[in-house]
Length: 118
Image (spheres, rainbow, N blue to C red):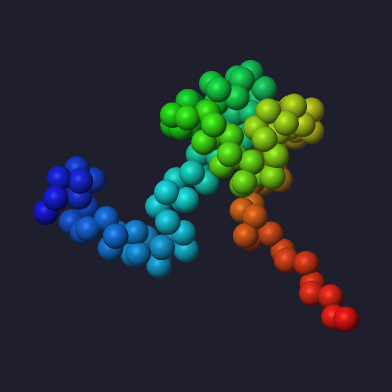
């Protein structure tokens, strides 16, 4: 057993773990983790008391650039724009409702446009 697998506490190779995770959850472990981090980031940004860099580090990301790119891919707008928009839009909304309404949807999950037949 290699040290990496032992450190993770998983008795399988990284590639096998990736395949099994994808079969079980429909996405890679990295994608799953980043989606959960972005969900948490949206909640922190809605509060409005932290700047984007602080939110980036608070959710466990180490690179503000990577965080911003992934946030934009999942949410559809940069975190700074989301923060400006969400602080006003979520005002007066119950936190559980705000979480549901603003939950990120991956671009590949967005409905596709109907094909136009000529």
